[in-house]
Length: 208
Image (cartoon, rainbow, N blue to C red; front, side):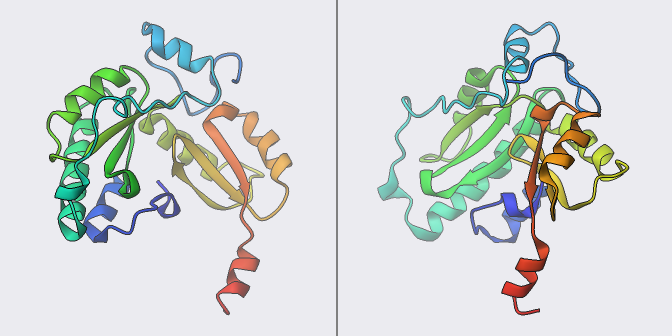
C-alpha cells in the first residue's frame, strides 16, 4: 500500500499496518481464485467493485465514551484486531485495512462474504468502534503480485506505484492515456488506476 493512501494521523503503530464495469476475465498478474463463489463472480463482472458499509444501520458509536486519546487508542487496538482477522482469511478474500477516524471506525476490504466478515469483526473490536466492510474486486495478494509485475513492465515510466484502496495505483509524470493502454495489455484495467503524478510541481512546492 502506498503511504499516501493512509489518511488518518494515528502514530507509528498504525503505520505498521500499512505494510502488511470491465467485461471479460482478468488478465496479467491479478487473477480470480474464487470461481465457485457466486458473489465473487458478480463482483468480477463490475468495475470497480461495489463498496457497502454493512454496519451503518446496525451500530451507532458512543462518541461520548471515546474522547481524544482514548478514542485513538481504541481505534488502534481495533485496527490490530482487524489486521489479524484479515491475515486469517483465505488469500483470495482478504483486502486492505484502514482507519476511518472521522467515522470512529475501521474499514476492511474483502472480495466476498462482506456481511459475515462485518458481524464477526464487530463482535471482537473495542466497544464504540464501528467496523465498515467494503467489497472489492481483487484481494490484496492478487494486487501485490500485479504491482510487482507493473514495476518492471517495459515502457511504463512510473514515478509512484503501490496497492491503494482496492487497486494498483500508478503515477506517471505525463502520458496518462498511453500508460493506461500499455497497462491494459497485461492487466485488467479494473485492477489499476493510472493517475498523473507531477513530481516537478511537488518539488517546486516544497522549495527543493
